[in-house]
Image (cartoon, rainbow over all chains, first blue to last red; front, side, top):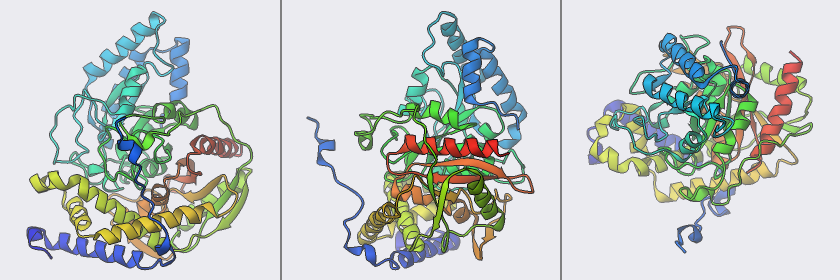
Length: 50
Length: 450
């Protein structure tokens, strides 16, 4: 683990590791979606004050 | 349970058979006698009674601000309120009033609603059991040894126990629907972008949706116009329509989602099948592929967005967070940008998969795979699965958040041990009114068949 996390407890470190393992395993299970554009959208006019 | 609906309270106020002061005093009395639920974290009787007295004055002079003028409604502790502290039930925030209202709270206050205190919640809404809170856990009104679910667990308990007829919640992976299901009441998560998130402390910007919990479906129809519509303070609502609560629906086409990744206990499955048989709908059944991948996408987006939001406060006050919440936030920091984008690609794929299921009015799932678990039980077993209680609570609910769909939980019965079972209906994007109409059709037919 990274240095800045040294104050984390063993239980927290185990939880972090388990969470990351589960997410990475799940994301790797879907191949069909990889050609699609991501769901998030950027809508410039929302930030246009005029 | 002593339950009176918001609709009944509105009618009684209109007819003059009760006053706002009576409703407020009775709610305060019930809150005091039901302190064991730990539903409220801030309640100021003098302030509540002053609001009620003002509502009575307005009504006496024929100047009622709306149908809801004078009804008491409780607010989840992650909505900013000018008169109460907003802490998200975390030790990381000060106990000071925000001095401003969330848009939805302001809408209700302007309509004369009596803002009835702040309700307990899972810390930062970052969990679905309501067992982790600066103020201690909430307890289920149906059995104090069982959890309410969360994260809007205080709101669920307050409505189910009849303290108030309605309360506000927020929903990132089921936090309105989970306590609604576990406590036997109604909860609605609007489509993403329909309801203003302004002033609701975020958990995950692209998954969060504020929503009401109430004692009846009609109550939800009274409340949703105060949630939905364009709010200049929330850019995602720029195209949001006002909520039209006059829309009803005919015999609906439902798809019962089952199969791998969607397991549930035998008693919950039996209750859903029984309800589908009795509700006079056209029902088909299908599965959804790749559930583990979709769940991973939801979890990746959740942790990344929460970590980004919390980064400044976490750097200043890491010890103000519970150990588990802090671990979630640290995990979010370690996910790579490409992993987040992969999650967003998968999210787009889920939307497509649901759209091509065919002609449907609502997708059906249980709200929870099990009835409300006993407090302290860390694991749940159902359908050949053994999962943490946290994961059991969000088991089905996160799908609607990942896809941005409107979703409602309605009570459909009780387990042999006396705990509620809820059914969830997911609608098409922005078809919130139609979904409420479909739920109305089902709810009516289930009640007639009782």
